[in-house]
Length: 206
Image (cartoon, rainbow, N blue to C red):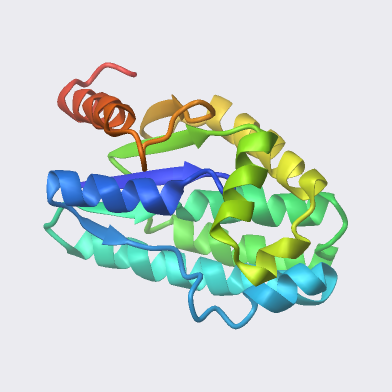
Protein backbone atom coordinates (compact mmCIF):
# COMPACT_ATOMS: atom_id res chain seq x y z
CA UNK A 1 0.00 0.00 0.00
CA UNK A 2 1.20 3.49 -0.90
CA UNK A 3 0.22 6.42 1.34
CA UNK A 4 1.49 9.94 0.60
CA UNK A 5 1.53 13.15 2.63
CA UNK A 6 1.30 16.36 0.62
CA UNK A 7 1.35 20.04 1.51
CA UNK A 8 3.25 23.28 1.29
CA UNK A 9 6.69 24.00 2.74
CA UNK A 10 6.30 24.07 6.53
CA UNK A 11 2.94 22.29 6.64
CA UNK A 12 4.39 19.45 8.74
CA UNK A 13 4.55 16.62 6.18
CA UNK A 14 7.80 15.03 7.34
CA UNK A 15 6.78 15.05 11.00
CA UNK A 16 3.36 13.57 10.33
CA UNK A 17 4.74 10.94 7.94
CA UNK A 18 7.23 9.87 10.64
CA UNK A 19 4.59 9.72 13.36
CA UNK A 20 2.11 7.80 11.20
CA UNK A 21 4.82 5.36 10.13
CA UNK A 22 5.71 4.68 13.77
CA UNK A 23 2.04 4.41 14.76
CA UNK A 24 0.95 2.01 12.01
CA UNK A 25 4.25 0.18 11.50
CA UNK A 26 4.82 1.51 7.99
CA UNK A 27 8.05 2.25 6.18
CA UNK A 28 8.64 5.93 5.43
CA UNK A 29 10.35 7.55 2.44
CA UNK A 30 11.47 11.13 3.01
CA UNK A 31 11.85 14.00 0.59
CA UNK A 32 15.40 14.51 -0.73
CA UNK A 33 16.21 17.60 1.35
CA UNK A 34 19.28 16.53 3.28
CA UNK A 35 22.27 16.38 0.96
CA UNK A 36 20.40 18.10 -1.87
CA UNK A 37 23.13 20.20 -3.58
CA UNK A 38 20.68 22.61 -5.23
CA UNK A 39 18.34 23.55 -2.39
CA UNK A 40 20.38 26.25 -0.64
CA UNK A 41 21.62 27.85 -3.92
CA UNK A 42 18.04 27.85 -5.24
CA UNK A 43 16.68 30.02 -2.44
CA UNK A 44 19.56 32.44 -3.04
CA UNK A 45 19.10 32.64 -6.83
CA UNK A 46 15.89 31.00 -8.06
CA UNK A 47 16.24 31.69 -11.82
CA UNK A 48 19.77 30.23 -11.85
CA UNK A 49 18.94 26.99 -10.04
CA UNK A 50 15.20 26.36 -10.63
CA UNK A 51 15.61 23.78 -13.40
CA UNK A 52 18.44 21.95 -11.59
CA UNK A 53 16.47 21.74 -8.36
CA UNK A 54 13.27 20.54 -10.00
CA UNK A 55 15.10 17.87 -11.99
CA UNK A 56 16.85 16.66 -8.83
CA UNK A 57 13.54 16.36 -6.97
CA UNK A 58 11.84 14.71 -9.97
CA UNK A 59 14.59 12.10 -10.26
CA UNK A 60 14.56 11.29 -6.54
CA UNK A 61 10.77 11.14 -6.43
CA UNK A 62 10.59 8.83 -9.43
CA UNK A 63 13.16 6.53 -7.82
CA UNK A 64 10.90 6.38 -4.77
CA UNK A 65 7.84 5.60 -6.92
CA UNK A 66 9.69 2.72 -8.57
CA UNK A 67 10.78 1.44 -5.16
CA UNK A 68 7.21 1.63 -3.85
CA UNK A 69 5.71 -0.11 -6.89
CA UNK A 70 8.24 -2.95 -6.62
CA UNK A 71 7.65 -3.39 -2.89
CA UNK A 72 5.01 -5.41 -1.06
CA UNK A 73 5.30 -3.23 2.06
CA UNK A 74 3.06 -0.46 3.35
CA UNK A 75 4.97 2.72 2.62
CA UNK A 76 4.21 6.35 3.46
CA UNK A 77 5.88 8.94 1.25
CA UNK A 78 6.79 12.51 2.16
CA UNK A 79 5.38 14.49 -0.82
CA UNK A 80 4.36 13.08 -4.23
CA UNK A 81 5.74 13.25 -7.74
CA UNK A 82 2.59 15.12 -8.83
CA UNK A 83 3.47 18.10 -6.66
CA UNK A 84 6.85 18.46 -8.34
CA UNK A 85 5.24 19.17 -11.69
CA UNK A 86 1.79 20.57 -10.98
CA UNK A 87 2.77 22.87 -8.13
CA UNK A 88 6.47 23.68 -7.80
CA UNK A 89 7.65 23.57 -11.43
CA UNK A 90 4.42 25.15 -12.70
CA UNK A 91 4.69 27.94 -10.13
CA UNK A 92 8.29 28.67 -11.15
CA UNK A 93 7.29 28.71 -14.81
CA UNK A 94 4.18 30.86 -14.41
CA UNK A 95 6.05 33.36 -12.25
CA UNK A 96 8.77 33.69 -14.89
CA UNK A 97 11.52 32.09 -12.81
CA UNK A 98 11.84 29.02 -15.06
CA UNK A 99 12.30 29.64 -18.80
CA UNK A 100 10.05 28.26 -21.55
CA UNK A 101 12.74 25.85 -22.74
CA UNK A 102 13.57 24.57 -19.27
CA UNK A 103 9.91 24.03 -18.41
CA UNK A 104 9.21 22.27 -21.72
CA UNK A 105 12.15 19.91 -21.12
CA UNK A 106 11.10 19.28 -17.53
CA UNK A 107 7.45 18.69 -18.42
CA UNK A 108 8.41 16.34 -21.26
CA UNK A 109 10.45 14.15 -18.91
CA UNK A 110 7.66 14.23 -16.31
CA UNK A 111 5.07 13.16 -18.90
CA UNK A 112 7.26 10.20 -19.90
CA UNK A 113 7.56 9.15 -16.25
CA UNK A 114 3.79 9.33 -15.81
CA UNK A 115 3.38 6.42 -18.24
CA UNK A 116 4.70 4.08 -15.52
CA UNK A 117 3.51 5.82 -12.36
CA UNK A 118 0.58 4.58 -10.28
CA UNK A 119 -1.17 7.02 -7.93
CA UNK A 120 -0.97 6.53 -4.13
CA UNK A 121 -3.75 4.47 -2.54
CA UNK A 122 -4.32 7.41 -0.21
CA UNK A 123 -3.09 11.00 -0.44
CA UNK A 124 -3.21 13.09 2.75
CA UNK A 125 -3.21 16.84 2.10
CA UNK A 126 -2.16 19.06 5.00
CA UNK A 127 -3.96 22.36 4.50
CA UNK A 128 -2.06 25.21 6.17
CA UNK A 129 -2.44 28.98 5.80
CA UNK A 130 0.45 31.41 5.53
CA UNK A 131 0.83 32.25 9.28
CA UNK A 132 1.08 28.54 10.12
CA UNK A 133 3.64 27.91 7.36
CA UNK A 134 5.82 30.87 8.35
CA UNK A 135 5.69 29.89 12.02
CA UNK A 136 6.69 26.29 11.28
CA UNK A 137 9.51 27.32 8.95
CA UNK A 138 10.90 29.73 11.54
CA UNK A 139 10.59 27.11 14.27
CA UNK A 140 12.68 24.48 12.44
CA UNK A 141 15.38 27.05 11.69
CA UNK A 142 16.92 25.88 8.42
CA UNK A 143 19.34 28.59 7.29
CA UNK A 144 18.59 28.19 3.56
CA UNK A 145 14.86 28.71 4.20
CA UNK A 146 15.43 32.23 5.56
CA UNK A 147 15.18 33.52 1.99
CA UNK A 148 11.72 32.04 1.34
CA UNK A 149 9.28 34.91 0.81
CA UNK A 150 5.71 35.02 2.03
CA UNK A 151 4.63 35.66 -1.57
CA UNK A 152 6.34 32.46 -2.76
CA UNK A 153 4.52 30.42 -0.10
CA UNK A 154 1.24 32.14 -0.92
CA UNK A 155 1.67 31.35 -4.63
CA UNK A 156 2.37 27.71 -3.79
CA UNK A 157 -0.73 27.55 -1.60
CA UNK A 158 -2.84 28.78 -4.52
CA UNK A 159 -1.41 26.04 -6.74
CA UNK A 160 -2.03 23.45 -4.01
CA UNK A 161 -5.68 24.46 -3.71
CA UNK A 162 -6.14 24.19 -7.47
CA UNK A 163 -4.36 20.82 -7.55
CA UNK A 164 -6.37 19.39 -4.65
CA UNK A 165 -9.69 20.67 -6.01
CA UNK A 166 -9.02 18.85 -9.29
CA UNK A 167 -7.32 15.73 -7.89
CA UNK A 168 -8.85 12.54 -9.31
CA UNK A 169 -5.88 10.15 -9.27
CA UNK A 170 -6.89 8.36 -6.07
CA UNK A 171 -8.44 8.63 -2.61
CA UNK A 172 -7.87 11.99 -0.92
CA UNK A 173 -7.99 12.99 2.74
CA UNK A 174 -7.80 16.73 3.48
CA UNK A 175 -6.70 17.73 7.00
CA UNK A 176 -6.75 21.37 8.08
CA UNK A 177 -3.70 21.65 10.36
CA UNK A 178 -3.96 25.37 11.11
CA UNK A 179 -5.15 24.75 14.67
CA UNK A 180 -3.66 21.30 15.24
CA UNK A 181 -0.45 20.47 17.12
CA UNK A 182 0.08 16.76 16.57
CA UNK A 183 3.66 16.99 17.86
CA UNK A 184 2.84 18.15 21.40
CA UNK A 185 -0.84 17.24 21.67
CA UNK A 186 -1.48 13.51 21.47
CA UNK A 187 -5.24 14.02 21.10
CA UNK A 188 -4.60 15.89 17.85
CA UNK A 189 -2.43 13.10 16.53
CA UNK A 190 -4.90 10.45 17.65
CA UNK A 191 -7.66 12.28 15.76
CA UNK A 192 -5.55 12.42 12.58
CA UNK A 193 -4.56 8.75 12.81
CA UNK A 194 -8.23 7.84 13.19
CA UNK A 195 -9.12 9.81 10.04
CA UNK A 196 -6.34 8.03 8.15
CA UNK A 197 -7.51 4.64 9.41
CA UNK A 198 -11.09 5.37 8.32
CA UNK A 199 -9.91 6.51 4.88
CA UNK A 200 -7.94 3.30 4.38
CA UNK A 201 -10.78 1.03 5.53
CA UNK A 202 -13.68 2.53 3.62
CA UNK A 203 -13.93 2.94 -0.13
CA UNK A 204 -16.10 6.07 0.04
CA UNK A 205 -14.35 9.47 -0.33
CA UNK A 206 -13.38 11.25 2.91
